[in-house]
Image (tube, rainbow, N blue to C red; front, side, top):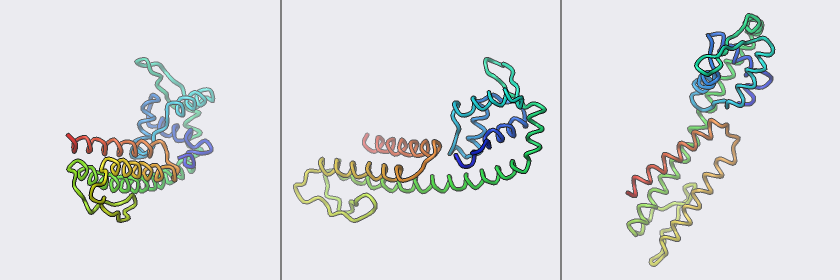
Length: 201
């Protein structure tokens, strides 16, 4: 996301959004999140300082409404937007490409996590039933021999849970994830945990 909004492009995009009508900062954040299909949302610490600088530059102005600052583009802001219409078109094209890349990456991460969670669920069922499940696998899908008779299933569960955690961490740490992607990953893990809670009720 840094590349898409580098060199003042976020400032330009905020002008574009305000050209559609007055908005407060939270609305601008939500509009950007929607534009990126929920995979990216700028923080308030990113948006509000830019709006303040744009106001100092005379590109926007604000009024107070309901305890919030509502920002509106000025004539000077409209003029800059019109002057940079070509850049706006290029920015829209880059955003579309970035959204496609983010959606693809999020899908890959979710697929990897779902696969690992399915493996963990199978192992949890086996441990709770104290059975010998021959289809257990290592993280990454490599076959693993079933525990020998008399094996400590609690210890086996602990080892495999550690393997699962290590693999998820490796998947995340090996990539440059945006805040939006990380939030998607956290929601996926929360969903997996909810599934395990239902399983073990």
